[in-house]
Amino acid sequence: MADARVTAAIHHWAPRFVANGVPLTDFQEVTAGIERWEDWCRAWSARAAVHEGLGDVAHAQGLNLSAGEHWMRAAVCYHFAKFVFVEDVAQMKTAHLKAVACRARALPFETPPGERVEIPFEATAFKGLLRKPVGVAKPPVVIMCMGLDSAKEETAAYEAPFLARGMAVLVFDGPGQGESEYELPIRGNYETAVRAVVDYVESRTDIDHHRIGLWGVSLGGYYAPRAAAFEKRVKACISLSGPFDWGDNWASLNELSRETFRVRTHAKTLEDARRVGETLTLKGVAQNITCPLFIVAGKQDRIVPWQDGEKLARAAKGPVEFLLLDDGNHVANNRGYRWRTQSADWMARQLGVPRV
Image (cartoon, rainbow, N blue to C red; front, side):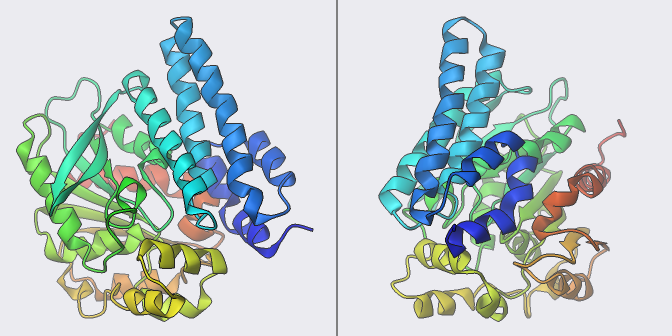
């Protein structure tokens, strides 16, 4: 019998894996062979290596489009090898760096292609990916904020509807996330991170810094509206299943999420982590959100209560659209067709993009 952590990972995140690029058969085969959580990262890394190898073969044959597709799939599988695998940080980091490398190799061959960027922040720099729609001069840009267990290597499927509608996307690893997680712990005042990214956008001449949108998924669904409350250069914000107050939700979090949060806050104990979690709050802050806000929540969410989205909708002072899906799970990845294109269309309207 699989241990409780394996069961929790499969139960909570299965739709997300498939919606974000893991082939269904891969998900079924890999998870069917895992009984111990200790084997999770190794099993997923082995499957990722299959896709990586196919990319290497295609590239050697000069088939770069195919190589890019294989490497992208490998990056997603490597990402899910590491996403909440804090059981063995060294093993997790090995898988993570493979994910980073595969997505970087895929970038020039993606449609549209992308570039790795560095965004100055305090004494270090965030690593990000910037992709721009083909044939659009100086497009608006959507800054994408990751969650507790997501990183920029997972986001190609999230990026696609914005790119297709003529918006650039800039996805970055902020404090406690992806390439920043080893150096920078999670922080409640995420507006400091977004301010640095917006400053970076203003330094570019190929994207329109007067038309900036903000997007956040899961814990990023807290980070994005939190930043929008302070960063008035943001013209519109999307929040996907974000918590209103992480501390209020602490007791109901599953074991994997609590331990991952502890590691990414650089806390020694769960109690220390819980105290950090209390700083992740929109209480007394959400009323400062005046830009248009699009909120997505699922009533079947077992990670972040859908009522948190309702709290945010009531507290924000700008125009709000609240999409509550009765049959949606966390981030409603099981019903992506009911919000992915809809939210991208909404953002396009807010940023003045012509209809397509």
